[in-house]
Structures are given as C-alpha cells and as structure tokens.
Length: 130
Image 1: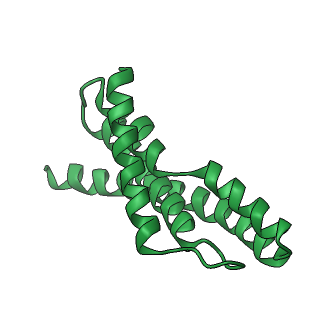
Image 2: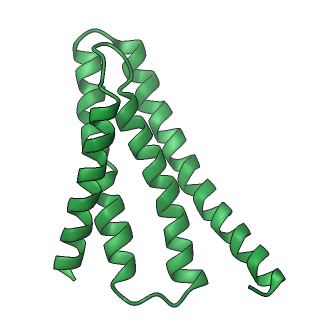
C-alpha cells in the first residue's frame, strides 16, 4: 500500500509543480497556483471519494492511490500556510487574511460541491439505468 500511495503522491506533486510553473506567484499577491491547486484538489477528492466508495466497487488500492496519494500530493496546504505567513510577514496583511480565509472557504466548498456533484451524477445514471 505504501508503494501505491508513494507513486500517486509523486505524480500529484509533479502535477502541482506544473501548475505552479504555469502560474507563477507575484510578490504581495495571492498565490493563484496554490489556491487553484487546493480548491481543484478538494473538488476532485469529493468526486473520487464518492465514485470509489459509493458508485463502484473499486479495488482496495484505488482510493489510497488516487485520494491519499495523487490528490494528497497535488494539494498543498503546507505551502498555503507558508505563503500566508510570508504575506503577513512582508506587510501584506489584508492579502494574507483574505487568502487565509478565502482558501479555507473555497476548499471546503469545493469538497462539498464535488461530493454533491458526484452523488447527483450517480443518481442520474442510476435513474437512466446506466
């Protein structure tokens, strides 16, 4: 299991790195790549969790590979914490506070939206007989 999680985590970290290279952070501004990474990752965690636990009988290693591994490596709340601290320390307190609370609200909302969307889609497929 550890090997599966490690492979997923490495791939998730590479995906995050690519996004951070595509959207570089600017001093004194919200680090958009990290925000997007965490919000998108939480949304996908919601979807994948429903799909592999409620919709399909996925093999035992699928959830650790995708959720704990890939999406755990993709999301980066430790970087988010360092960035909030850096913004505050550099005197950008309003940006730091907005980023701090905005990320939390958006990430939690995204996870809930992912769960809800996946359950809705699964219900629609069930009603159609797919």
